[in-house]
Image 1 (tube, rainbow, N blue to C red):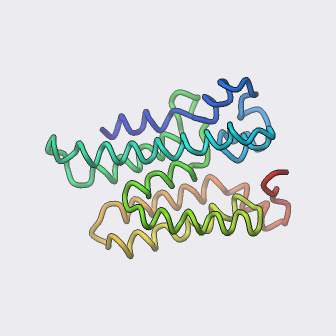
Image 2 (image 1 turned 90 degrees about the vertical axis):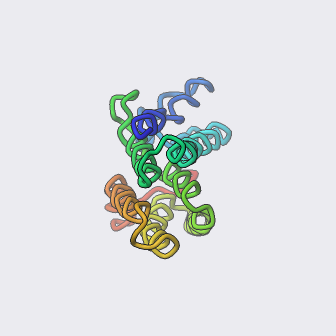
Image 3 (image 1 turned 90 degrees about the horizontal axis):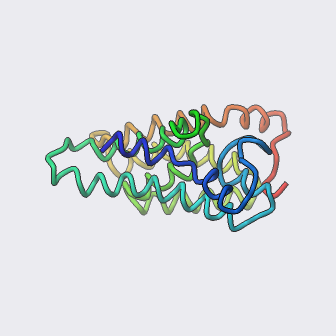
Length: 194
């Protein structure tokens, strides 16, 4: 199940959607990141929205299917948390795309919605408020990444494997945004839509 979650995470919807809409490979323009924000730089909103939805849905599906299947086959209680980590890592380091993946914000959102949807909703609202308030996607992502483990420990407690996996996801989100952090500190980070 965890291997399947990784393979599902390795499907880059930015690449798939770009091919369907005859857009250039998202690795070749803008930030070079295969994600919804970079696809939006083509000026095409529908492909960007489909990329966002696809990456979020794969995170949700991997966890939800595993959570349903694991008790039926006698898998360990932490399998759902493991699937969340695996689908997220699959998005960051996709085997189908030479390990050149996205930053993982949408996929992490889908994972959190599957673990505990009210927390996913709260983090999604925080992301939207910051993204549209400051028009900086990376700032919104970093803020929600910081809040993610705090929220998971609050709702699930320290005994839940999801709480500990959320720390790893948050750290990986910060690592994937290290260039954005430097640009934010330098005041040169690009705004959404530019």
